Amino acid sequence: MKLSWFVSSVSAFALTAALTLGVGGAAHADGRAERRPAERAAATGYVALGDSYSSGVGAGGYDANSGSCKRSTKAYPALWAAAHKPSSFAFTACSGARTGDVLSGQLGPLSASTGLVSISVGGNDAGFADTMTTCVFNGDSACLSRIDRARAYISGTLPGQLDKVYSAISAKAPAARVVVIGYPRFYHLGGGCIGGLSEKKRSAINAAADHIDTVIAKRAADHGFAYADINTTFAGHEICSGKPWLNSVALPVDESYHPNAAGQSGGYLPVFASAA
Image: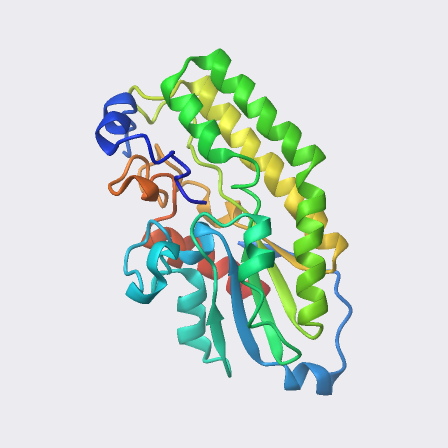
């Protein structure tokens, strides 16, 4: 999720001054019926869709040709493709993408020959950028109120938006195994941070991450897709842990609250590989 995830009007200096944070998988079973052996054997390409958590914002090593999408050679899709050598690899995940962006600009490479698809999307739809900005620059009450609004969207509107994306993937790549990737909890709770966001805010932000993951997992299951629970590997590597796999405040600012290279290789890659 792009930090346009911290809105572009927030400067790195102001953000750093406002927020001081100390920094010290397994996949659910998928419900898709097995394809016929010949159909699956013919479908061998891999397409990586989604937002900045899939494009690799925060991990560095960006492909200059990807521009503002900031696709990283250190992101889990690129790492998996390098290790497994699929017959084709299309990396269309893009920083800042919402469900509508996936539908309008990322599905082109999908076809009957696509055997594997990965996707993370939904956080930008839910307004996590504005939520985090509110929580950084305001008190507990304003933060919790904004989180409540995000959670209402996640419960009421996001499921339908995810259904549109998942249905489109199935229609364009009927033989593909689809792995839906969740989002990690941001914070290790219990006193590892000095200053910055209150424990109440951190706890509420984590609960919101759990909420969106629950909704995403349910929609994935209902479409017969696999769901990859990132928290199985990120546990103990959140912000405020001894070895965080998530950036706290970072330069450039859009890399804040995104997985670093270790988070992609140690957190995302094993969970995705298990589900793929």
